[in-house]
Amino acid sequence: MTLTEKLYQMMQENTEAGQPADLKIGTVVSAEPLEISINPQMAPLQRGVLYLTAAVIEKKIPVLSHRHTTSGLAHSHTTDGLSHTHTANGSATTTALDGGYASSEALSQDSFSSSEALNSVVCYENGQPLPVENGYIILNRGLAVGDKVLLLRAQKGQKFAVLSRLF
Image (cartoon, rainbow, N blue to C red; front, side):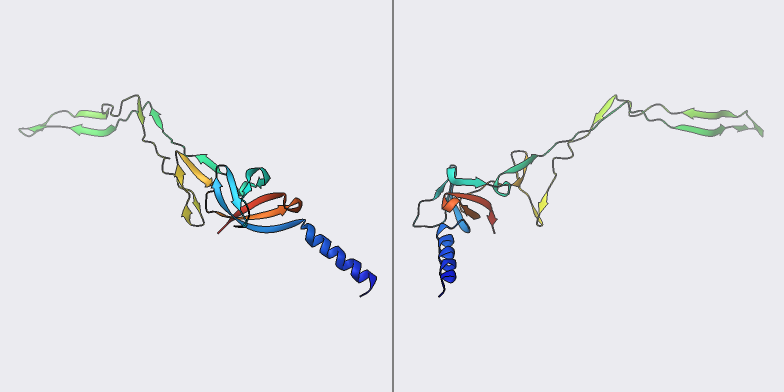
């Protein structure tokens, strides 16, 4: 082995020993406070060494209720072309009901309220409806006990970025 090869081998061993970054799989053992275990023989990682990405933080939107009010309704019909005559002993009376006549108004209340119509909005992800809790659609739930997560180890194992849940 040449000196160059030996130096290269030492450099690779040093880099591997430092472990600048590495992917790990962990399991959430506590949601509050957050703790993630990557090795049963080690204590779980505490919230202070974990960086959470957007993929594992809860995101939710409110379910909106929606109501329409329609004001000033009035409804009427006009009947045109009416005529009315009587015949008695072979002679006719003059025409009555000549012209157009409006009916009385119906639906004359000032306003009508509809029922709430958007309280049954459903959002889907991967063909499954997203959960609704306390009036919110949960777009992305927070981490829960038992979730498997993908971690990126950094700073020689001193910090971990929680990249996503694993399914």
